[in-house]
Amino acid sequence: MSDVGDMSDMGDRVFNFSAGPATLPEPVLRQAQRDVFNIADSGIGIMEHSHRGKVFERITEETEALCREIGNIPDNYRVFWMQGGATSQCYMVPANFLGEGQTADYFDTGKWAGDSIREVPLYGNLHICGSSAATNHDRILGPADASYSPAPVYVQYTSNNTIVGTEWHDEPANIPAGSFLVCDASSNIFSRPIDVNKYGMIYAGAQKNLGPSGITLLIARDDVLELSPRKLPEMMHYKNHAKWVGRFNTPNTFGVYLMGEVFKWILAEGGLTAMAEKNAAKSDVVYAFLDSQDFYTPHAQKASRSRMNLTFRCPTPELDAEFTRQADKKGLSGLTGHRITKGMRASMYNAFPIEGAHALVDFMKSFALEHAAAAKA
Image 1 (cartoon, rainbow, N blue to C red):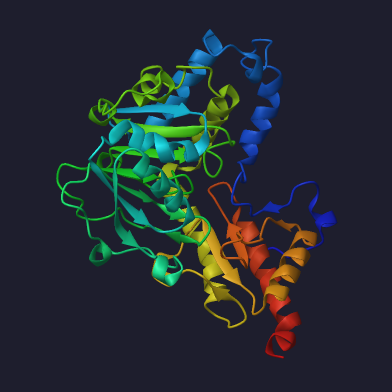
Image 2 (cartoon, rainbow, N blue to C red; image 1 turned 135 degrees about the vertical axis):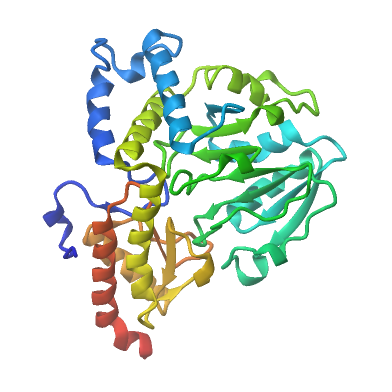
């Protein structure tokens, strides 16, 4: 178990609990330092290579192949990437798949789901098939909570909710026949095994588990990509980006490269089964402590807790502010909660080390002991 010292005792790196952009694997960062200057003995850095040149073409092919290997992605699915972050997919999904007069079903489990929901009426009919809003989005919806429309084109959900700290541990059940499942997996993509066959499309902003900000991974089934309910600008057609494996226009070349390096690291660590085990071990350290005391209050219900984003608060807002102030000085960075839930949020994605989880608990214990009297006053 790690002792928490002052930031000066930890060298030039701290424990980064940021919700994203987030911690990247150290071996990946070390390799990137070299490849920014000169990649593959080409005499040119990765950010200087043409996206149509042989070096980047090899990187594109390698990154796609690694992604397919990690996710066990079938041949009838395309793997590609786009710019604009996951936020752009909020409107891209209904624009590409939902015709006028047709209906899409959405689960409302928090802010990021709400961002997608807001865009749907621009293109077709929206049906909320389940919502956790009544309990401040502190839980994930079960099969009994779902009420689907008769014939939705697709059903969309957000697999992990960073702000409130909840996570779907299984896909939504029993979606209507003839519809397909769409998932915004931005904050837990490749943190555990996934059955891609259950989905029509998966998309994920890279800045949590896959790489830097500014690039989004998309995995889409061939038949879904053929849907074309309306005329769109060429840049808005998914099938154009899929055909060119993310090179329909100039992509974020550094983002594609770094994603490939992260994929190599995931495989070297043992793949998605190993990621799931490591993520469970890290989050269990913190949740076990939260369940053993009465100073901190978790936000998410136990059965719905996220392995990626752990949310809790002190007895008062003033103590929340003092907690994060002192934590920063101890080298525990990025713990301030989102403005919606306030309190604290500890984000521990794939590359976050378990030593950071132990360091957080050590600090939580000492802080609670120091301020227990003030909390009761």
